[in-house]
Image (cartoon, rainbow, N blue to C red; front, side):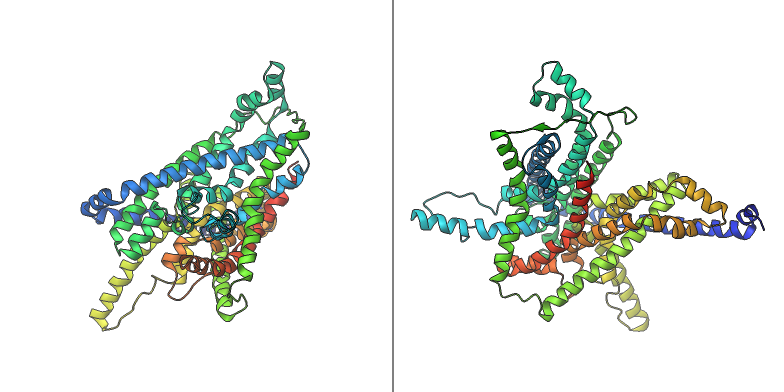
Length: 556
């Protein structure tokens, strides 16, 4: 039998069609799962009625909206200034320690913002080290001086800026590295100073990448719960949790979630538009590398200080403070209780990472195999989860499945006099589904980045040898994409370890994770105890950051 016979035999054609249908069905089911929370939130908000809406408008809605917008504006401004400034300095100039700092500037990505909040509250709050020393040295009383309040809107914005600026830094640095020196040097030749050339030439050319980075930080800001909740900053994220658990107002929580969802989807649309315009230059043209300017004297010292401060306050100092707090606490990391927290966190993160990456492979390969409206729509919906805060996803999944469980239990009671209880609500699998919806976009990004290395001719060669589409994926794509898939697994694993709002709302009874334990201890003002699980979360977060740092070091 010839190769052509194998490729066109009825059995081979049938297997190929069955494989494509199965892949299409799985991809559509994944997209439907990602769309379910958004649809459920919309329906639950509409069912809630106008009375709840009026009550929210009269009481908390405007306050939540104003605080959220102000927090977003502060974080966007801070991450833009810090990310772009440091990226320009380490890329376009040379000063002592520049090569080390260009990698170290990524380290704050390993920290959840709420962990920084615990560390800085310990040293900057009224009973903290800084104010205690200040009172001892000056002899002042508590009312004799003014000190910035860390537990405030400004404090929350500062914590978020310190951990989120690497998003802007990485994208801005990549954009600056890709720029040719021709336009910059032309501006200098026409009489512009270095600063003027930067603002008139380099910054506009990098604008799409920078805007995409800032929009990512904004979406992370509106999704944050741990930091704003600990600092008592009333945003939509805290309002959803309060309505759900404290007020037991499911309709109010759904309507607040709908407001936050609308804002998030608007930002996702803006990010999509920016990504579509992310190339202002012709990559086919011969690029002339920008010669870095050698800084000396006070300029070199200022550059070292500007790039060193984010690393010190975003990574080094928090680690030192957390270790000091952990040593003085009574928390035993090796106790059966803490080993249970670690086991729960690792189990959830491991299962969620495997299922999320598998879902990304299905959706990504379906887009490659059958490009069209169906595959494009499935991929687009699957990516929307990164713009939807964890609290919104939790509400969107809890509402329909709680209704299903209650209806099933009522039917079983009336028909068979048997109570089924809550079969789905409060289960690990529903929580894992929430993680998959939330972090599928990150896995898709890593998978598609590696998929670009698989040339289309490889698919054609495999098909000519009689391989089905699923066989091509298993025998050709997956071995080549193993580094990208490993990166995706690590990223999702760590993201799940840090995730807080969805875990708080959806976790099974008495099934706590490290993030929940840290939040609970911090809420009880036991910051020394909260340092121990926080350190474990940070240690886990260093895994993908190390991979990113290695990649940054190679981009020269």
